[in-house]
Each structure stands twice: as C-alpha cells, then as structure tokens.
Length: 169
Image (cartoon, rainbow, N blue to C red):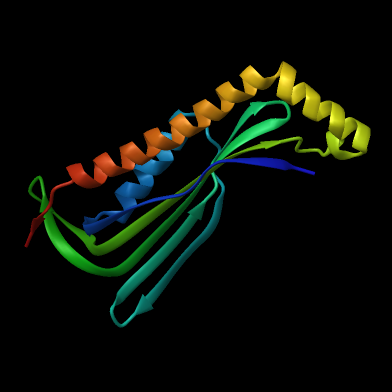
C-alpha cells in the first residue's frame, strides 16, 4: 500500500483581473517539463453560467525521485466569472478573460508504491526503522526539494500574473 507523507496542504492564493488562460497553461506546462515532472491532468471542466464561464483544472504532476518514491504537487485551479475581453498586447488584438482565479497547492511524498514493504508486519516495521534512522537525511532532502519546487512554481505563476499587462480596447 502506498504511503503518503503530506508536506504542505491547502496553500492558496487568488488573483482577480485579466487572465490569458492559454498562456498560463503553457507556462505551467513548460515549468513542469523543465523540472522533470510528468503531468497527469485529473480533471479539466468548463461550464458556462449567466454570470460568466467557470473553468476547473486539477493537475497532479509527479516526479520519480527514487525506485520506490515519487513527489507529487497537487494543483487545483478554479477560474470563476470569466468574461471575454478584447485587449491589445504589443499592438496585436487578443481575446482573453477577465475574472477570478484561485490556485490551491498540496504537496506530498509517496513511498512504497508496490506495497512490498506493507505485506507483513515485520517488513513494515523494518522499513520504518530503515526510513527513520538510515535514510532520514535522504528523505529529508527529497521533501525539502519537493517543497522548494512547489514554492518556485507558486512564485512563477504569481510573477506571470502580476507581470502581464494588457490594454483594454
């Protein structure tokens, strides 16, 4: 059975304003690819309501860090009350959205993916001892790297949203 150690849970930030959803998605994909993460898109839904469009994305990028451990950054993106606007970017007219976006990040480390160490109570006990006393520094480094990656991704998205300036037409 897979063992999950939650490293961060429910870290959120919000943005309200003009959003280029396609560029945001491209930046997210590029960042994940450059850092060696494999992207798994769990949910991608779009609904149209009278007050605007709603887009919900749930992405589970993961990175294999050792033979029996992988790091996962669980990303939820909720875009609400999206209305299309025409703006001018570097002299080019472009259709983008105006609305609200909420990002939620959860980070965890999964170990013992095949369940080999959970088969018997003795194996589980020995695995726990090995993890706590022998591989502790190695696991600490993996956890620190995963949390740093999540923080860097959050900074990247925030800087993109704050840097992007549009002229409304």
